[in-house]
Structure formats: C-alpha cells, structure tokens
Length: 214
Image (cartoon, rainbow, N blue to C red; front, side, top):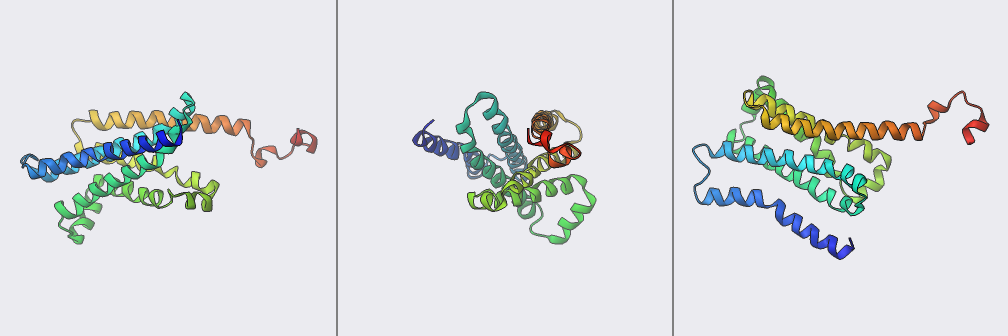
C-alpha cells in the first residue's frame, strides 16, 4: 500500500471511528436513548473503548502473520480513538452520573470495586496516549515499547471492570477477555522466542569470549 492509499484509508478509519459517537448524538436529539440515557451512553462508550483497545492490540500480530506491514501505520490512530472513547466513558461517569461530585466519586472508588478497576484502566491509558507521538518514541527508545505493555494491563483492568459491573450475564466481558488472553499469549510466546534467539548478556555470563562472539 502506497502513502496515498494509506492516507485515504486513515480518513476512512477516522470517519468510521466517529460513527458510534454520531449514533449517540443522533439518538440524543431524537429522544431515542431509552428510559436510562446515562446507562446507554456509559455502556456504548465503554464497549467501544474495549473494542478499539483489542483492535489496536490485534494489529501487531496481524501485521506479522499476514506480512501486511502497512497495518502499523493505522495502529496509532485506532489507539488514540480507544483513548478518546475511554475519555467519553469516564466523562459520562463524572459528569452525567456523578455531576462532578468529587466526594461521591471517591466513595465509589473505595466501595465499588468495578469503579476502581475501570478507573485503573483509564489512568493507565493516559501515558500511552501522551507518548504516542513520533517525538516521544524517539526520546524513549526501547523504553517506549516497555511502557506500552501497559495497554495489556489496562485491557485486563477493563475486562475485570466489565465482569464486576454486569455480575450476571458474563458473555460479553468474557468474550472480550478471551480475545485479550489470546493476544497476550501470542505476545508472550513471541517474546520468549526472541529471548532464545537473542540471549541477554546475563544469559551469556560464564561463556568463553570465543563462544560469545560466534
């Protein structure tokens, strides 16, 4: 895929990623959010945050398995949209649900475990979004990749948040959790394979210089 085609694809992805928000806005203006609009908005933004996190995490294995290296060019945009919907999800909670009542929010964090898990997932996404630029990638070097492993912890916290929230019907959160588990296992397997191919200096201790250099 050439640069022009990639730019067109990014425009398409950008517009497509705004469709869930557009649907919520349309429903709001047409009074179609049901008896509990806050709950509908909360669940919709939460679902799309999770979907986009999983989509972002799927790009690297998909790129390697299909040899479609252009996929890396859209990962950052999808990741930022995941953070965008995470912000909408969090804003819905603090604004529409709690009316910016800090005392009530603090009580929620301590008394309702699913709020704590969701808040953890959101906070972990903040440094990932802030360091997603090319400038930060250059500054952090290899540490950038280590930092961005936080996306898996954020995803795990998000799945736990969903499981503790619904309690009864666990099909949807368990579906997300299964996909996340597969992606995490894949990354661990790749990491272990690369570690064996490229042993660290610690693993090389005790070997003779001749063996090390070969």
